[in-house]
Image (cartoon, rainbow, N blue to C red; front, side, top):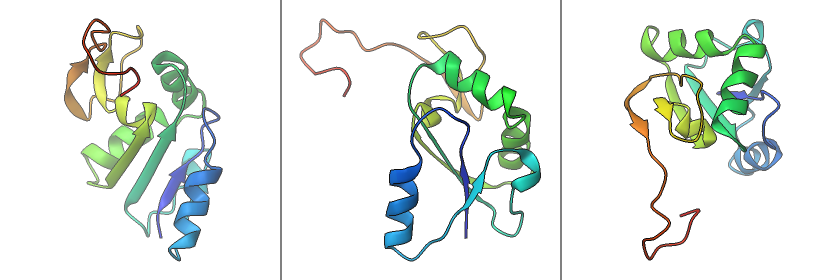
Length: 119
């Protein structure tokens, strides 16, 4: 009932298991031709660095496809961890350009503050 992006960065197993627990069987997407256009929903999980994640989307030819699906075709998208960070134009933690789905740039936490990083 939704598209779950698997681009090699991060473990989608826990996301898939959580979806299965509530009766949802996602279509696992590793390349654009696997996208199930019947379901206009995407989950984009990711772990690791911003640049590695963006580069993995590009290598799988999913970077431009995700932008088109969300910005033009109006698919709903949920990002988890670096998947959510990729929605922005850029990150201080990398040099690659993000998906630019959400206007703005990510900045690092000021570690001199009193909250824990990661937060």
